[in-house]
Structures are given as C-alpha cells and as structure tokens.
Length: 172
Length: 223
Image (cartoon, rainbow over all chains, first blue to last red; front, side):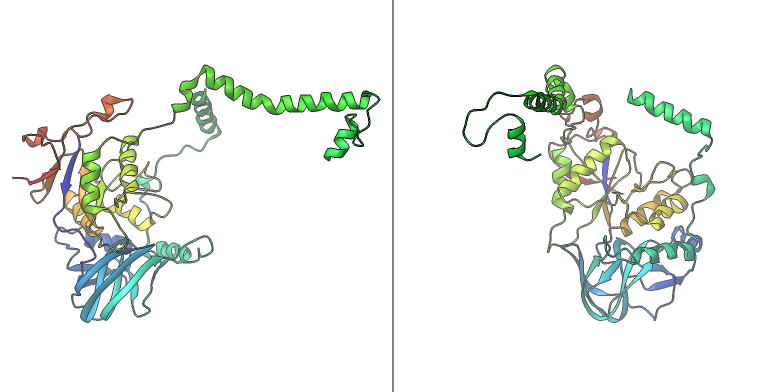
C-alpha cells in the first residue's frame, strides 16, 4: 500500500546556514549530521574554515539547460546549500563564487554581495580529470564502507562454477 | 568481385551478342550465388517463422507504462522541472523494486526530479550516508541512490537529510507517523499491466488513513 507525504520545508535553494562546524573526516561529519538537533537550515559541516557567515536573502534557484542558476544577495559572505550532490566537476559561471563540499555530500555556494550564477556539471568524455579529485576526497575524508555493509562473496572455483551453472540453468 | 567480372563469369556477354551457353565456370558462379543468397536468407527466414509461430514473444519484454495518471499529474504539476522555472522540490521513493522503477521512469519522462538516482554518477559520499547515517543495508544497492533507513536508523535524521536534498514528497509503502507530514491521497486505479494483482494495490492509499477515498488529488494535513 503506497502513501505519499509532503515534507514541510524542502531545500529549494533557500538553505543558508551560518553556524559552521569544521570536521575533516567522514565519521566526524556524520556524528554531526546524526545529531537530532542538527538543522540543515542553520548548521553546516565543512572540511575547512570560512569567514563568518551571514544568511543570504532573495534566493532563487531556477532551472537552466544543463544546470541550475542561483541568484540572491548577501550583506557579507554567505553559504547556500544546494539540493545537489557535491563533485569537483561542478563549475560556476561566476568566478567570484566558490563551490565547496558541505555536510559531506552536498554542494554549497559561497559568495559575497550579489550573486547570479549558473552551476553546471563539467564532466564528460573529454573532461574526466575532475573525478580524480573526487576520488582523492574519498581517501582524505576516510570514506570507507564498514565490513558489515559489504556482501559476502565466496571466491572459490567451486562457487564460481555453481554461480555459472545457475546462470546457464536460468537462461535455459 | 565487381559486377562486370561477375556477369562475365556467369556467362553473360556485355557486348550484346548471344552467349554460346554457360560453361562449368558459369554454373559454378550461379550455384555459389544461389547458396550465398540462401545462407543470408536463413536468419531472416527463421525470424519470420518464429514470428508466425510464436508471435507472443514479441511482447515478452514490452512493459506498458504504469497507469497512474493521478500520481503523475499531481507530482508533475507540483515539481516538474522546466527551463527558466524555479526549482520546486523533488520526490523521494523509499522502494526500489522493478515496478517502483517503472513508476520512477514514468515520472522522469515528465521531468519530475527525484532524489532517487540510478546512474554511475551517484557519489560515494552519498552512498556512505546510506550506510553510516541511515543504517541501510546496501548490499544490493550498486550505483543506486535509494535512501531509506535500516535497522537502527533514525527516520527524523533521514527526513531532515531528504529535505536538504530537495525532497518535497516522500512516497512510501510504510506509514510515517511524523506529525508534520502531509498525506496526499489518490483514488485507487488498476493499471493496465498484465499483472493486475501487483498493479491494483499500488494506489489503494486511504484505508489506513480512515478517510474517504477522493476522486481527485487532494491534500490533507494529518491529525
């Protein structure tokens, strides 16, 4: 039986947290995110420090071909949490805007003053280099599945032949 | 072999004069050509015979789109993406079975964004969130992002994270007792799928809510 629920305050590009916590490893970041009092609208966990943040205003996230466009303003320096996963392949059209990793997996924009920028994923067949930086982040942050999360794989010839036999039988 | 050479070998004269009759070379060429044509015709012929004798095989892998117009219209009206329009939130499905993927595909076709993802671009960090934060068993979640909680996971933490990821609607077959949630209900509709027993329960939402099933999409705050 299916049910559909509406969440009261989704991130429509309007989350502009100001309370920054610094954590340099994935388990330390998750310890913050797993706290019942952690509010993505006010709190953010970054891997490196920023100047004091002020909430951004007049934020508007619109869809453009191949990406999103964020416009808004800040009285100082602001951070906006995008409803998008972070990758080093993300690129902002405005060079004054920084894209940083926030809360381990989210992309966030850091800007001062007025902003009107397009964010696109600059990853492709001829531009795969940014993925290396993503891989380096895995090591730097210590992202590793706990052993219990990995499915048990029996690597014996007998097991391989059994699986092969089962696959052939399924095809028949 | 080029056409003039072929025709000469087959005993055809290109100067318009009569041939003295096909020799052994010509016969060999015609017979060889015949066998070659036969050989290349075998597969299409087999296909033709198969199509005639077992026509039902043609639709074995054809799956009709889910017949869920109320759900599709409701989510598309409220979240579908369009160039130049504001982002209005996305949808998070908690299930990832075969028929759920059909529903997801049907929504993707109408530009409804979902938190759920099935691609090579799912980042390891978000995969890690599923394991370490939501406590989900990801043994069979390869390159999927289907966020839900496992044993020991917190629904509040999950819903906060989903909201931060842009989720506006959560579609689940589990009852979520969070007071802040709003339930959207649709009248039951049997999909035109071959397996009505599977399709017919999909939108039978309403009974556990102890409220009449409306004839069109409505929203109501839960008490």
